[in-house]
Image (cartoon, rainbow, N blue to C red; front, side, top):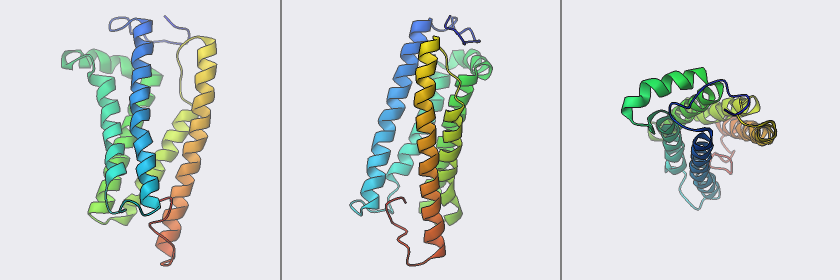
Length: 188
């Protein structure tokens, strides 16, 4: 068992399998977030209409995927065992919370655009803020060296997410307060 891992996942996976599955999940989530950024930039520059809910739908899909990947990749029959292990494992609990935040933020963004509910515009920046904070305190498993590397990466990503959240929030705030402010600007 890796150091700093208090939960025994051996009923489902070896340590190496857990590492491979974790890497796969991170790569898939990262692969979903690349297009989110590209689409948001294209909308910000007016290349894609901002009324479309493309990136917002991918945020929702990323949240649903992450929760499903965590809980269902062993099959429905193993969900009770996986659920009990996830609840005992601080790292996996944080992953599940991130999945929930992404799902709620994606849904809030879609509803904001489709139903024209401006208050829901703050769902995405609030989710980014919360996820950024979670990244700053994200529990890690592995050797001391692997933990140090992962904590460093998560710290930088957490700070970046918090800064992006601030940029989104300021853009929404000023767009709502000042009619001349470009509400379809670079950040939103």
